[in-house]
Length: 432
Ligand SMILES: *Cc1c(COP(=O)(O)O)cnc(C)c1O
Image 1 (spheres, protein in one colour):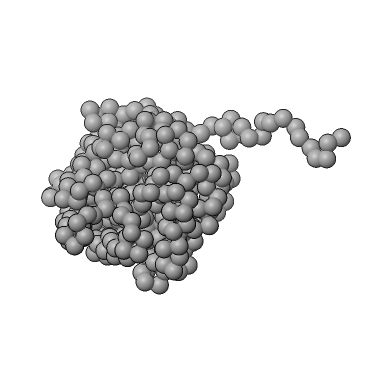
Image 2: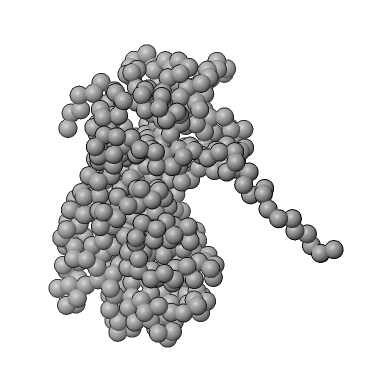
């Protein structure tokens, strides 16, 4: 599709190429009203992608997406995901609480933690429960009680390759190794489990749908072996998340329709062979909301040193991915189309940390103090990953709603928030 807006450099921008057209004309006023910096999320885009995901898997009976709450843990966003029919993958007590806060219960919740502490199991089992996904066989004995249905996270080890974010399966801390997966289910059965699921999560931001097809085939093959050996059936397999988005302008989008069609084939084949088949669950975060968020920040300083620097009013507290993973996030300067005269600059925050850069040697149009910069694809693992090093505070979050209004859905942190943990009753040991 050809987008007519002159600033479009990224024709592959998934799902909502119209965000720029809807947003940029209003951006100066939005920035004026709310102040910068802010993450802004696009409700229309999230819904379009969510509906597309559901449609792509319509041929797989029992398909359900469990949105990975950690990607964008804002109740307003989770409520939209719930309206799309999604459940939630939670990996902490806070995420369980958020998802329950918008009405998710029981089967709507998958609790996938690792190195789990007892209070996390208590929270996962309380308040209508959740689908417990255990990371190791040793946790079976540590559960306060065995729920009727249990799931294990499977780590295939050398049989598969992972990627930079998750790590090579052999080195990854997650999941039950191949040699122990049967023992894990045996231990759960011995403690009374009667219904079963098998989970894995092997790659993150993977753009090749064929990797995910292989993951589903792997899960079905393990399910087949386990159901034969243990005389059990599986309610579901969960292929994890990890569907990628094109952060870079030249990248093609993930072919979710091809994945859905091939998945449907694999499940139909399994059903034909066995007379039953598990349901398919997925827990994408990035794919659903990643492309539908932007970080808007204002240029406040310029520096000509050995390189050209543009200093902006956001920093790693708002977006860690460039500093942490060297991740590329596309940057627009609305009103200043990219062109032949672009000069390579480093776009930097104020942290005393040299990797506090949103872009390194990136050709950008000439930027003046006061210009707004739009950093793309911050709708997943963006705000949520921000940290408070240097006492730098996390920014507000805004939602561009379907009817074109902009709503604040989280305020910016204040110094009072930041210092809140210094306010406590004195305590000393040994007592005097
Ligand atoms: C982070 C995570 C996800 C979501 O990953 P995306 O790359 O955002 O799709 C899903 N499942 C588990 C267990 C995770 O830790």
